[in-house]
Every structure is written in structure tokens, then in C-alpha cells.
Amino acid sequence: MSKIWIIAKKELTSFFDSLMAYVMIVLFLGFSGFFTWLFGSDIFMSGQASLRSFFSIAFWTLFFFIPAVTMGLLTDERKTGTLELLVTKPVSNWQIILGKFFSALLLICITLALTLPYYFTVASIGKVDHGAVWMGYLGLLFLSASYISIGLFAGSLTNNQIVAFLLALLIGIFFHLIFELIGSATGGWFGGFFNYLSLSNHYESMSRGVVDSKDVIFFLSVILSGLLGTELVLHKRTSSY
Amino acid sequence: MEVIIDNITKSYGIQKAVDRVSFQAGKGEILGFLGPNGAGKTTTMRIITCFMAPDEGDVKIGGLSIHEKPEEIKKHIGYLPESNPLYKDMPVIDYLHYVAELQQVPKSLIRHRIGEMIQVCGLKAEKYKKIYELSKGYQQRVGLAQALIHDPEVLILDEPTSGLDPNQIVEIRELIRKIGKEKTVILCSHILAEVEATCDRIVIINKGQLVADGTATNLRKQAQQKEIFRVTIEDGDRNAIFAALQGLESVETVDFIPKQLQSFEILSKANVSSRKGVFRLCVAKGWTITEMILVERKLEEVFRDLTVNN
Image 1 (cartoon, each protein chain N blue to C red):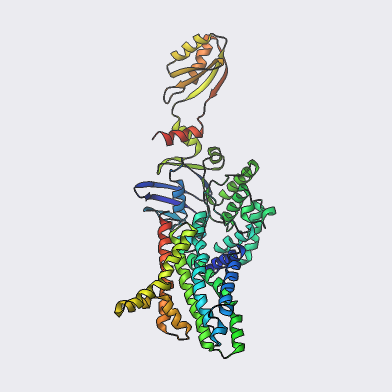
Image 2: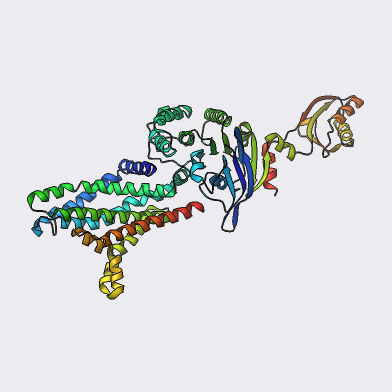
């Protein structure tokens, strides 16, 4: 566990050293703040003390930002050869992958924590469904974790950051949009199956404030399969360098 | 700790990078590991450091097998890879701290070890700089510092002195020799003079196969079965001397040495020496030998013989 933390800490520091973290935070707060407070179906338009507009905009901004965060995590190590250095230290592949996973998740946590003033503001102007807000944040965290593990998997497949970024978006868009579209276009067990695979459906139900073990299990399985895939590829790549 | 490489084979597709290679390195020994480009040196290093697994065979370090206890083995290895990969965005001191933590150096010792490494590798003025700001030689020192930071029992160095200036090369060789007294060092290099100056024993591989294993002196002897020496003989006609030398029983060929009128290079027949014969000949004829030098084969030639001919 301590080695996961050592790696996560190092990655998190380099996010901040390379300005990545600041750009990410500023852009995320800019986008989500603009659409939550100033433009489109913002809070004042809806006339309700709720953060629904924030959660639906964060749903999209995170979808695009997370691949940008994760794209360098593994590709850089492979390209510069530092992976060889890391793998020959007394750490397992799992510790490396989890370290990187948590570094990205921590960055997202910090970013999301900075949006808490939205919540306090809304809470001060009206009666807020506190449960729904916290569940919404939890949903965002689950969603982020899922896209991080998909991003890591995409990064394990290539040495190129841009390819990793696009690949993560490509895989992500299925969970984000396409499965849902297929699910609603078809019916029966087939449609139900795709509806279940759609990440947006699960996020939706969570941000409404409903905790369903079905949703949690879904998110955990996406995260786990992403990480498992990453480990598999990494193991294969290092054993046949 | 003893390193035993036992019959390892590793293929990439149909190409065998390492083919049934076995050798050992004991405690207190510096082993030079030589071979031309693409001979399988780096692959062997990567197998020893548990970066990848061999298709067949085993490596045992301190009695532990790389197949069973890689995690345990990695704790005792310090490794400087060939290309010296580094996290270039990190300051030197942070990088060393990170590696020390990964290598499980006890928290109370980390600062002390970092200080020592900075001292030993001459990084004092550079310790707060980011690694990409350093010159190649200094980056090499950082690579060496990270390999040594946990005081490893087994040190594996791939071209440790590349990019260093002559003074630093001497210092680093000195350091490697010092470490080699108590630890096991495997040193990979193209610079034969360096290997000869630092290593106790030399292993040469070519096209994935072991072609030589022994001390530098032994390797030379093995490769040089026929004696070669140069003589300068005065007080006589050079053609007469040439003919007389050629007439000796133990001599295979005699050559004139260009630009030196009275000098000859003599190649003896296998396993015999003709030096005494030459001396007696000169005494009998009243010639004077002013110079007689045994020509030692250079390690470079031994290396070329072993790796080009087969």
C-alpha cells in the first residue's frame, strides 16, 4: 500500500510541476462554472436550488478532460524508458498501475473539491436536497474512476500520447453515449443489456440521489476491467520488450 | 550475493536473442560482460534484473530464483540501464528521494544516503536542478546515484562511464572497484580498456551464445597459441639474417618490419618458442641482438576473433 502511495504522490507532484493540474483545474472550473451559473439552462433559469445543471455539464467536461490527464501516465514511461527503471525496482505491476490510477483520481478529487463553493452558494439561497448533491458528487467520482481506468488501459496499448488520448475517447464514447443510444433504439433483452452497459444511465440514476447496488457494481466492474486490462497488457509488454 | 545464470534462452519471434547462456558472478567479483551490438547483452541484463522472464532457464541471485521471488531479488539489485532513463522533469534530489523510497531505504536513513550519493557522484552543485538541465555526463552520474542509493548487494551497470569526462571516468572506475570488493558487480561495456582495467573476469557473448569466460590474461593466452615477437639484429646483412632466421626449425614465418631495416617479426610454429633459437643463431654468427619484444595480443583482437569469425 505504501508503495502505491509513493508512486501516486510522485505522479501528483509532477501533475502540478508540469502545469497540467492547473490547466485542468482552471479549464474545468471555467467550463462548469460558466454553464452552471451564466449560460444555457443554468441554475437561475431552472428556478430550483439544485446542482443538476452542474452535474450534467461536469459529466461532459470530465469525459474530455480525463483522457488528457491519463494519456501521459504510461506512455511517457515507456517512451523514455523509465518503465524499465520502475519495473526493476521492488514494485509490482499492480502497484505501479494503482499508483497512477490514484494519482489521477486524487487530481480529480481536488478539482471537484474546488466546486464545493457552488454547493454552499446554492444551499444558502434555497432549500437543497443534500442527499442528491452528495450522491451526485459520488457519481462523478465513480464516473471519473471509470474513465481513468479506461484511459490507463488506452495508454498501455501505445507509446504515443495523442493516440492514447484518442483511444481513450473512442472507448469512452461507447460507455458515454453509444451504448445508451443502442439501448434506447432497440428493445427487449438486447436493449436492456446495452442500457445496462451505458455509463450515463448509471450516472443519471446516481445523480438523482438514488443509491442502487446495481450502479455501484457496474462502476466497480468497469474500473476493475480497465485496470485488469492494463495489467495484462503491461505484463505482456514487459515480458516481450 | 552470488549471481548464477543457468542456461537461459530468450527469443523474439524466431530470432534467438539469448541462446543457452550460463555464467556466474561471485561476491567480491567484478564481471565484465562483453559482446558486439545485438549480441544479447541487454536482454541478459533485463532477465537478471527481473524486467522480463526468460523462455527457458533460470537465474538465481543469493539462492533465490527470478521465477519465484522477483520482488525479493529486486531489493538487492542496483541497475543502471543502457540508455540511462530518468524522470527529466524532476529535481535531482527529489528523484533520488523517490527511488530511495521505492527501494525501501528506511525513512531515517534516506537523507543520509542521498547526501552520501550526492557526495560520491559529485552532484553537490546540481542537486536542486531539474534533471533535463544537466549535461549528459551529469545525467549519467544521477543514473549511477539511483542505482547505488540502497547500497545493493548486486550492481548491474550497462555502460556506466558513457558521457563522462576522463577525470570522472577514473573516479567512477575507482568507485566500482571499491564496491566490487564486497559486492557483486556485472559491468557491461564496449570499452575494452575499461573492462580490462576494472574487471576480474570477462564473459563474452556473440549472437546470443557464450563464446568466452575467463580472466583477461587467460583469454589472451587461449586466443594466442602461436608466439609472435620482434627482434632487431645488428652487425649483419639484413637479407642474410632474414634467410638464417627463416632456416630455424621452430620458425614459421619471418617478416621485415617496414621502415626499420634491421628489425624482423617472427611467428613461431604452434606451441613452441623460437626465442632461444634466435639467440643461439646470433651468437653463432656474431650478430648482436639489440631488441627483442614479445608481441602481446590486445584484448580488442581477442574480442574480434571471438565475435567475427564464427
